[in-house]
Length: 254
Image 1 (spheres, helix red, strand yellow):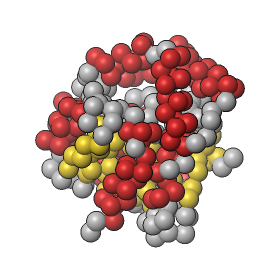
Image 2: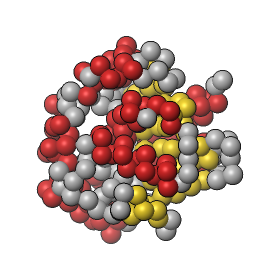
Image 3: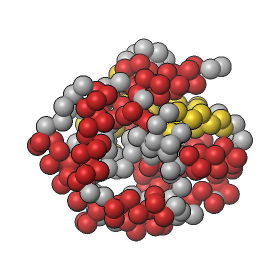
Image 4: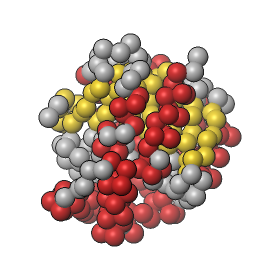
């Protein structure tokens, strides 16, 4: 299992096509792990790029942490990962909460970013976004697993499901994740969003509750373009090849 130490904690990573000239780093969403990209999206991108995937703290096979789920802490982690892998400048993509991390990186460390891809980043001030933690249920997980199995053709076993469920319960009830999410509620209203000048691709589902957030971001970011993909918030699972091709085309554009 490839592991690097980032800010004193173990982080699980995967790398594809390490010899490529340019690198894409992909950040997964909250309550998920790098497998969202690993089976379908990353391999297509790796035909042209070095692709780096990593599990966020307390997710997947990365080390657990009680605190540090605010965007400043999460981007500090990502910056430290870039340093550990000796990556000076990368293309960056993020899904859901990972999209918020990607946006924050482009604000704080624009010199480390070439292009920015944001997939289904939610508005943290939306009650549905912040309430999803409290509304989490085993049925939600099973729906996610069903979609995951349909697209990857890899069936997630009972042990894996139970391990994921324990991870979610740990995040909900033992960490600072709820208060950290509350702390970020005004992120989309911050003038800092408008300082992003990097070319940005915004990918959102046509039936997603977050689509209005994408439209809002398009109006704030000078060089952003919004593309609506059939599906809802789970478009990387529902439409992995569509997402992969959109990302590949975007990152290759001169």
